[in-house]
Amino acid sequence: MEKEAIQELKKIVAHSDNIVFFGGAGVSTESGIPDFRSVDGLYNQKYDYPPETILSHSFYMRHPEEFYRFYRDKMICTTAKPNKAHLALAELERRGKLKAVITQNIDGLHQAAGSKCVLELHGSVHRNFCEECHAFYGLDTIINSTGVPTCQACGGRLKPDVVLYEEGLNDETINRSVRFLSEADVLIIGGTSLAVYPAAGLIDYFQGSKLIVINKAPTPRDRYADLLIQAPIGEVLSSVL
Image (cartoon, helix red, strand yellow):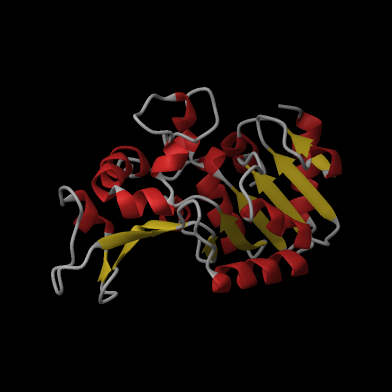
C-alpha cells in the first residue's frame, strides 16, 4: 500500500463532511463471504446451473426448490462478522463525515457494524415476505425451513427481499441514492468491479470534487479517479481513522 495515497485519502476525509461510499462484494469478502467474479467466487464454482441463472426471477418462479437449495447454501452466511471496512465506515458516519453507504451487498454487515444510513440496492437476506399476504419474516425463518418456505398465516410462498436478475431495483432506494450521490462532495467507490447495472450506473450522478476508487482489480472508473488505491479495502479505510 502506498503511504502517499493513504496520506492523501486522510487529507481528503479530514476536509470533508459530505462523503458517500458506494460498495460491492469486495467489501464483504474480508468477512469470508465469496464474491461472484474473483478466482474463488461463485462464477468459478460448479453447479448444475450458472449462479446467474439460479438467481434470476424466471428460475425462481420455475424451480423454487432448486433456487432455495442454492440460496441457503451460498447466499446466506450467518457466521460472517463485520470487518475493518464495515467498522471504519460506521465510525466515519458517527464522526459526521460519511452521509450514506450505498451497497450492492445483501448481507446486512454494514448495519451490524453500526452504520445507520445504508441504502441496499439489491435488498437484504434479513427481510423476507409472503407473496400472497405480504407478511414479514426474518432470516431465521428461511434458515430453519426446508424446501420452499411458506407463510405461517396463509400458506403462501416466501420470497427473500433481494433483487434477482430480471427484477428492477426499488424506486425509493434509487431515488435516495441519487440524492446522496448528487449532493456529495466526495465519493469513495470500494470493493466493486462496477460491472452490475443499473446499480453501477448510479455513480454517474456524482458531481462532487473528489472521486476515490479502492479496489484490488481495475474498474471502468479508474481513469476518472482523483485517487486510485489497489489494496485491501479494510486495510485502507481503517488506516484513515
